[in-house]
Image (spheres, rainbow, N blue to C red):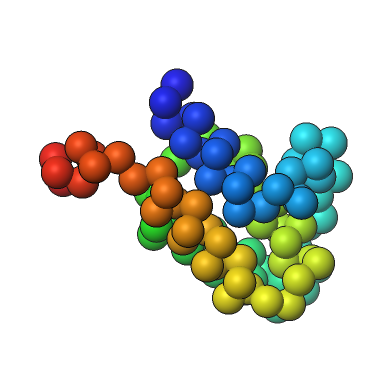
Length: 96
């Protein structure tokens, strides 16, 4: 349950404006190669910084919507990194 809470916190923090589209299941599909590249970059960033989580897939629609409305994936990646860093448990780092 703790991991789910972390995932939800990160996505809600980084993509608050896009979460209504996830909740309503109205997020877009990738429309073209550029949209897909943006989506892949955000997924890769999330997984690199926060770790892989099957539960996080539930919220990847927010990443799709972010890529549709913003041309600034660098800003989105920075928000992911900041939100993930805030969720790092010092005991997890010590055990790694």
